[in-house]
Image (cartoon, rainbow, N blue to C red; front, side, top):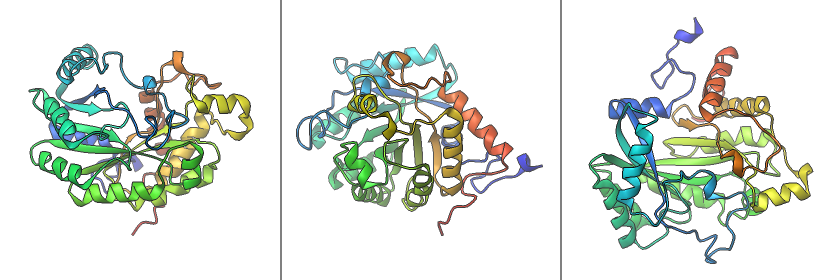
Length: 319
């Protein structure tokens, strides 16, 4: 039977699962604890621009216990309490520096913040969310030293491989910056993750699916994908209200089709961490209402791969 096939990543899943890798690596469930360390962004403070990327509202994905007025240690403690009520099986925790650009400070400040998180007895590593234009060789060298003892992952907001799209969403960097950051991260033996958004205005479904070939050329450890969600108060939501014809807002079925087309072209060596986003309904200004949690969408994705007898990398051209 097709379900009994073992794929090149060593499991019978039809995609290379980041969650499975994490479980094996740590010997059980590992829970990420979101941290808001009070960073800003060069696209907000005037260094590159003001107002941020047109789709961005960090409130849409930061838990309520994460406020920069609290210390890193306090946020970790409250995060552990919060998640223990939901997930009692976690064997350890990862501090996830998530809000805004978490490498956008002096190396002295960054090291102090990261060290405070790693000094917590329940924390076994860091995931650091940032922009590809906000890392330095000095910082990567410091993180490589930390990685001798702890798990370290740097997640880069790439969002799109198209420079035209990046300009349209006021991202403030080009795709070449992403290539450089990922390559320099991997060259130091560090885990490099990437974020992509499907459905940004001006991008066709064909172009998005075929962008998997470009992403596959990067030395990435993992990949997070999410659908464009229109968040109340953002420039993107205002743009949609003024010109809805410029947007391709997929139905859930269409979105799953697109993710599968992308996955078929994606290198089997890149682990898939997430395939959808989940903003609080109170913050959405979006005509779609999928009424489905991200975990449920992931299960639908797995079911569709099985139904279509396809898998990650089936038509990947890399190598």
